[in-house]
Image 1 (tube, helix red, strand yellow):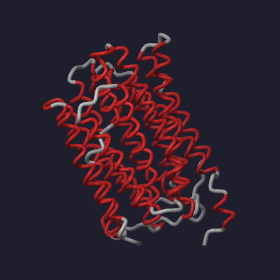
Image 2: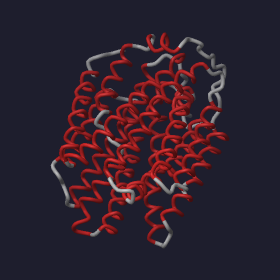
Image 3: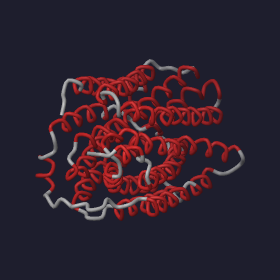
Length: 398
């Protein structure tokens, strides 16, 4: 049983190192994400192309996460896999910064997302083993808060630099630097779990032994994920909605500001959600987080164009993102045995990634073919189904 002293000291070197890695990694990633819609718009077919780039990257990442989770459980030392993943993501950011045609952007995004997929389960397994079950919510909430702080800072810094005369290309190259810092933070701060025993079980038998309660969780995650499109499409919607009244340049600036607000909301809700999750029913909280996503797509499908309603859309998006990620991770850590934790986190990430693949391509091309209202209504249907499954989870106990 966990001692009160250990529970009280959950913010240890490993949790802090992982948190700092997430902060700087997302600072890099989100700066690139904020500039990506305008970058790809210069190639034409913005919505479809953006959905394809994000969807393909997420789809390949989901495969890497599944394999990376199983691989994590077979390793005696998981830290090198995490360090390598952060280092390759740095190379992917540099490839995007040097891109002159959209296939180079796709290649950089895919490289980054495959690396992210391989290192994510290892990072989450190390985080879960660095704390006690009674503090899973706080540990994962802290990590999500740090991650989202990077997402807040990135678009604000990008807007400030662009406004001061920096070129888009220069800002993209600057975004490579925090990716390298993230690699160092993970390498220097994270500690291996003492006495970890690798699990040599083959891939398919390992998947079959995952607990039934966890598989029920994956059904809800998968259904919701099929409507949970890439946030860059949300930014693109804001640009297009605001352009008639404010012009392209002003609309792009306001859209990036709204995206920063979404990330502020997500950061603000992450740790309180984790704290509350350590005390109440996590399944009910997850359904509430999914509900925010359903409400967001409802507003988007209705064709909102005013700034106040767009602010409400981005607020709901932030609530959904902050609550969803913390609660899915905390529930996964709670439901999985230690020997299969890497595989389980890989499965969770793979299901989320596969959902992102479907939703980003679905929304992007439905938008291009039939308009944004149809695209976001389709996404909302999947989100509503996922919320329904999450409500059903409340009736099940481990």
